[in-house]
Image 1 (cartoon, one colour):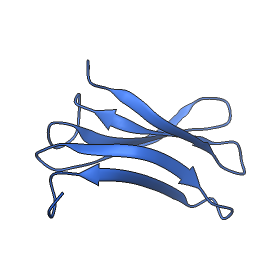
Image 2 (spheres, one colour):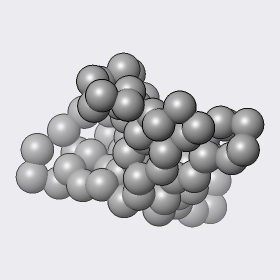
Image 3 (cartoon, one colour):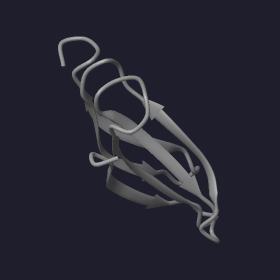
Image 4 (cartoon, helix red, strand yellow):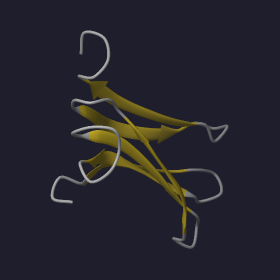
Length: 81
């Protein structure tokens, strides 16, 4: 969609690539957070979305030394924002 964008890229120890960003094309509400994983050859592995009925934004992605993936973001859908 017109409102899809990437906000961060991270690579794990096996050279898998994680892209975090925002989308208004799919998910639960207006803008939602997405995370996509590609293998080291660039083949899509999976994708996830998070969010509620209003705006939720990814601000970045990181992978630690144990290959745990972390997505940072902001929500206007849950709690006080």
